[in-house]
Length: 222
Image 1 (tube, helix red, strand yellow):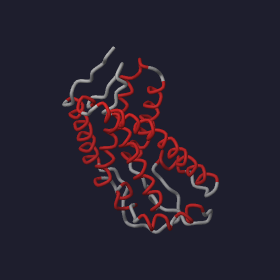
Image 2 (cartoon, one colour):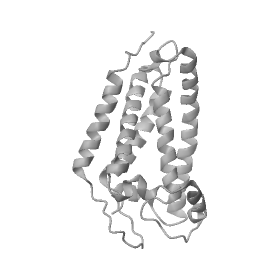
Image 3 (cartoon, helix red, strand yellow):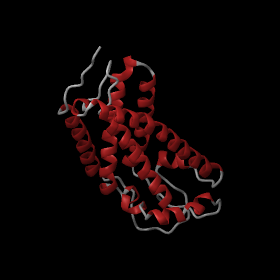
């Protein structure tokens, strides 16, 4: 057992939230309220993952998989090798991929709080910034989404490589939490810490709710 229940829930909920944000952004103005809701959901999930990176079980913690950038680069040949030993948790390269993906999602959500099209919709914190700043953040929001698409495509390619090149089904692992690898035991456990899970969930929901409720009221101009 490697991935605890909260880590797996986070993974699949962030996938659904990202897809929902993408769909509602493309579906037209009638869906933009839902686009903001998906954005708030993504933000709450990111707050949860930050907390779970310190409170979760062994392989969910940042300290377990974060290495120096140099060490992560040195592990790239291992990633490309068919016969390299498998990691129980994230490799150093995988750990940096997680950090980058979480950062990109944070940039996407953070910039979205301030955007406006000056006609139909505006983010909850748009009144706090100038029009020029809002325009810059809107550009970042659009551009960063393209970067996210590229990064997620690479992520899917790596999953495919592990499946068909290295013989490791990472999708199944993220569904079940179990890895079948020959590796020395570290004595750690992926058992879910339910009390901390509930606490992290409540903190995340309350934090994002307060963020939204304490913001200036969104101004809809239609």
